[in-house]
Amino acid sequence: MVYKFVLFVLIIAPFSAQPHSGRTNAEGCHTDKMNNDYHCHNEVGKSVPTRTHLPPLPENYATSFSNAKFKAERDVYYDYNATFYCQCDFVFDDIDDADNDGNTHETMVDALSCGYTPRNPVTSTGKPNARVSRIEWEHIMPAYIIGGELDQWQNQENYSECQKPNGKYLTGRDCAYETVPTFRRAHDDLVNLAPAVGELNADRSNFQFSIITGETRNYGQCDFEVDFNSDTAEPAEKVRGDIARVYLYMIQMYGVSLNNNVIQIIQEWNESDPVDEWECKRNVRIKKSQGYSNSIVEKLCRK
Ligand SMILES: [Ca+2]
Ligand SMILES: [Ca+2]
Ligand SMILES: [Ca+2]
View 1 (tube, protein in one colour):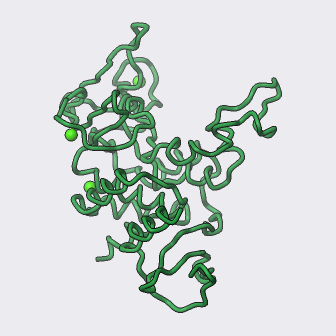
View 2 (cartoon, rainbow, N blue to C red; view 1 turned 135 degrees about the vertical axis):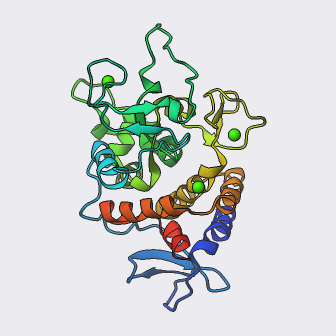
View 3 (cartoon, rainbow, N blue to C red; view 1 turned 180 degrees about the horizontal axis):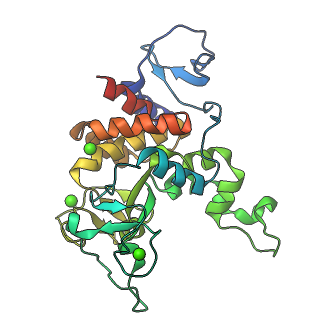
């Protein structure tokens, strides 16, 4: 526990060091009424947001995951049609019916725009793989990493609220979503959602990000690797910082804990890929749409 706390201090302090006055309790912590935040101070007086209280739920926060996806499309990505990992062009509505299936209301990825070649163009049953041409809203930090350790996720049959009228139980993820408000908020947070090619979202699954030896190109020119042996994925250099800052935010906002190796990688990625215009713009739009956004990005964009 102490180790975890020290780690937290080391990670978060550089982004949030805002010394201020205020009476602290025996653990050096206090409630900051102005910011509606409970946090602690280390020995050099720097603010460390070991957050146990989230800000009040903003009025305009997503009311469900489908509402979050709707908000992401309408308020954030309406004029920025590039997928997160591969920067493939896409449209939200395939009005030209590029795949000739009669559906003009589906998302459509322009594979040629980014040199993407699907790893699995057909499914195991021999049908065209629908996930290669559509975008899906990727949880940059997978839902499993956010809430997979919750008892509601692991042992949903202990929760009567998670029993359906037919006697069966919700999946662990759905049970956590229905019964743990903090998880629900984290799950629907627009900061953590980005449009990705469906196949990449599927392949990445809930794998942790890491550096993978070599540069295997399983997706054509798209610089994205998935190692199914070590359950890890390696994103392109230009999105590593974006990912890192989402991770740092998820730790700070929702108290997600990660192992030391991952922390080290995200710290490096935060340095090697600094914020750019789009990342800043995205963050401003998210704040407007859901009431709050990534304060780490906000500060870096002000510099
Ligand atoms: Ca179509
Ligand atoms: Ca790579
Ligand atoms: Ca970047």
